[in-house]
Image 1 (tube, rainbow, N blue to C red):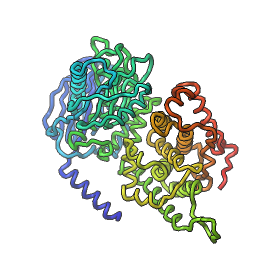
Image 2: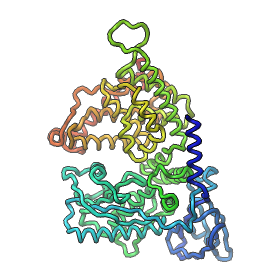
Image 3: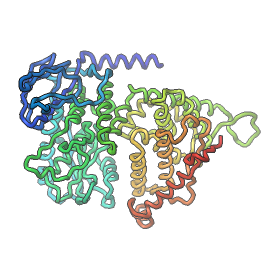
Image 4: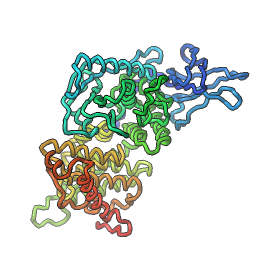
Length: 596
């Protein structure tokens, strides 16, 4: 079976990349303060005579290697350019001009560039079809808001085309009804995703007038990551000028095409917009060199291979983009965007992490088959072991997974373990719908393998409940792929949405989710002794008692008893949950006595 799969993958790769050539991007930035003439000499293709405007960033697309020539007073210069790198021209101390490469973690694994079908010069400009929508709070008549938004999309498209050869085309317009009781941006994005389909477009862009401008740092627009299908933008803020609205839109479109946050003050990808830069007469929306490189690389994948999902990026692109995002993350250590993108780049089937997680999951499935073969403990006299059920079954699976993961290389062991138990014991159907995380889950476990696992798995529980096991292990999985803060935020947003439905908000579910995050974060940061897990893991050691925690709260009941999520009563309830978790034996090192 494995040999057949391997042959299929080899055949697929050969078919996909037949005739592929080196397909790389070079980014040049002019920081000299004057227009700069340069000659770009690709090994394949025409020599280009360029004049780089002051402060401008220019991506150059090529097949193979290239050189650049430019004049420095008394000393003409010529440099070889490395694949998928960014450079800037600046003044030297002796009134000359020189070029400097921006270090982005390049190494031997990415020095040869990447292979894509077609050619840089012949591949057409890519166009992403978009559907634009407003909610019912939009005050203008459709003829007016449609004209306004079409012009903004057209302006954003022109900017993107300049930096990555990818444009936008409006193929449909419409409206949706936003929830008037929701003032949380993440929850509103989730609602927009649930209510609106991108079809006939590839991306749905929603403009909501649900809120007015809020002073200070706040979400004015958002999406979930590169090539995600939905973008939500706040529109109902009269204090925001049209140039600022355009910048917000381009910022999110940049995220859609793979741009992370940048420390450069003039970049559209700076973390905080709405800082009055757009009001200056010399203002223009532009990307910084590093993010230009990132979106241009993904743009070439769209142009040459028509990819629609992050999972479809070639291994060469993923490796280089991971290096780029790692470098960006070091420049903004407090910002989570780049680290999140690194995790997304490492979530494909070609990575050691996916293969390692698959091995751990296979051990869990074999353990399930062995357990299922045991006789059920039905109250009769049985000599020998009986089938594990409930919390005992959960502990058995986690210990078997930890034992398997401890045999893996140190660099992937903990993450592979958490990914495997998240897929194996969490909610696989929900995982498949999560951008990036779902792609990784499918890489670890094919649909037919998942069917086998569900047949033999049984009912592993946490405190006797299957749903709490799913919340716990799903949150552990999301901690690996998104980070602890984002995993907690995702669990909270899910419960706030549940308050609008039949199930209601459950602080018990939140306790399981937050305990799963603490468990995963403790393992990743070595506060929990991973090597001991095969002997010491028990449910009670890592999941607190849930007695007295409210469940099934409707939106009205939640508002009456706890207010909104920023209400002191709500925060007090979360603090009580966190207190219960921190009081567990696992998080008290001096008394780390866990029963076997």
